[in-house]
Amino acid sequence: MAEEFAERMLRTMNEAALALMVSVGHRTGLFDAMAGMPAATSAEIASTAGLDERYVREWLAVMTTGRIVEHDGEAGTYSLPAGHAAWLTRAAGMQNLATGMQYIGLMAMVEDQIVECFRHGGGVPYSAFPRFQAVMAEDSGAVHDATLIDGTLPLVPGLTGRLADGIDVADVGCGSGHAVNLMAAAFPRSRFTGFDFSEAGIAAARAEAARRGLANARFEQRDAARLDENARFDFVTTFDAVHDQARPDLMLAGIAAALRPGGIYLCVDTSASSKLAENLSHPLATFLYTVSCMHCMTVSLADGGMGLGTMWGEQTARKMLGEAGFTSVEAKRVDGDIVNAYIVATKD
Image (tube, rainbow, N blue to C red; front, side, top):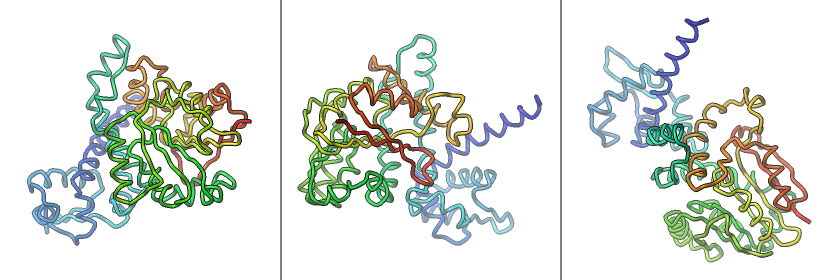
């Protein structure tokens, strides 16, 4: 038993290192370059990708020993199997698992600060994660492109018809605003507002809206816990934006107040139980609890917040939504989505 555990730890070390280098392959475009090439030398791959050959050669060694890339020792060539490229390239869209590997490096950047939090409490501020919003935008953007209009919104009965006719919509914690802009383009008669505290996120959202000529999309820099809107919207969304707030309770109460009578709130957030024992079979539980400790929980605590955590779970979500004033809460699932729950909440 002890030897088996030691072997597992060695595998874990290798897999953790591989995850970091998969992130490097994604960020440098190496997977994308190799997917369009026949078997090639490290020099040829480096030239195609516009990168330094020595670094590419070392990276290829990792990919070869990690069984991601195939290597012909006699010919000195490397190739990326099509079955692997289908999960590692930008052409894969929301199936590109390499996108998520970037979180490993982001979390490693704050390890020293997290260790100090273990010793003294407190948290690591959002400002310590300079690339987090960009990675989140890339990650969620691929999902929104593939599923938002035709998959997610139809989960709410009658909603797409109302959007087509024209209603007022808000996305709270909109980040770079891609979801708002997608909805605004698909439903030109409706009016969309995105709220986020990030100046950079709002600037990116406005720039995308301008590029797409969307007159029905606007963005405001605002703290999600201080919406201060009264019966202004017919439909409000949040996408993975509740659990890392300093005061998610105030955010949810503000959303309830911002809805008109008969309004609908769609909360897309982590699919999990609030009870650890019920998450043992969750395929991403270890990763998501790590993301919670290294980012979502700590940024909340850094702001003097509740530290709700990524895995706040459906039971806690239902309780908090009820306390915020919602009278009907229904959780839905989308086939193939192991990360998110889709919670539809209404109030009288």
